Image (tube, rainbow, N blue to C red; front, top):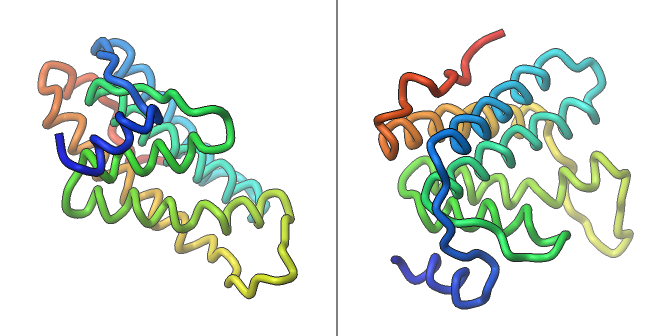
Length: 161
């Protein structure tokens, strides 16, 4: 267990809790369905919300596949989920999980029209979020298939309509 993952476990943000193949496959199927839905939505705000939700669901599938579950209270679970994936992964997947955590605050502002007048934070670029989500979905699919080869054939590919 690396140091980042150890901090999340010791801080009681996550805990070891094995997941069945069926749970991982099911969580992944929901993430891909949400991802496809995000491409059909017309309004920018809704596209942002749905695409981000797909990324969060995919990250949760990765976290559960690795045998961890959340212990945090509502409000910090998005951060913890992406931080756990970043701690578990390497390369592109780690970078993408960290990127989604950075985009999270801007997503919140775009979806809920929240704004702190004392902050000069840049607006969320919907295309940047959509690209990051698409890349995360592809990387997550590869990681899940590699981590659980027995279910690889049952994992719906993220590319599609």
